[in-house]
Amino acid sequence: MTVRDILLYPKDKTILRAKSTYVEVFEQHTLDLIKDLKDTLHAYTDGIGLAAPQIGVNMRVVIVCLGSQDNQETRQS
Image (cartoon, rainbow, N blue to C red; front, side, top):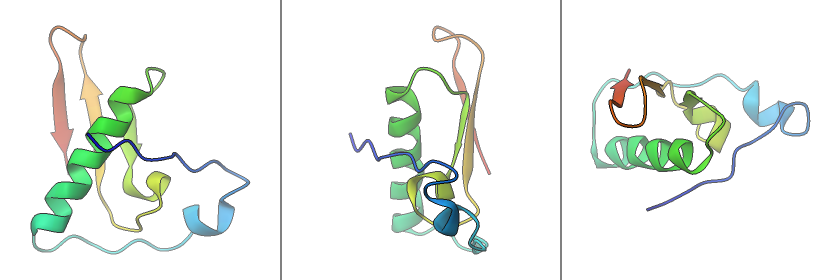
C-alpha cells in the first residue's frame, strides 16, 4: 500500500497548476499510479475523489468513489 502526500493550494500552487499530460496507453506505471491514488484516497476519509496532480503527478488521471464503504465502486478515467 502506497499512501502519498496530498498537495495543497496555495502552498503547492505551481505544481497543481501545471498542465497535465493525457494518458494514451495504460502501462504499468499508469496502473501503479491508479493504485497509489486509490490507496491515498482510502487513507484520507474526508474525500470522495482524487486527481493525480494532487499527489504530484501531472497526468490526467482521476478516481472517484461512489456509494458507501460496503457498496464501494471506484471509477477510473
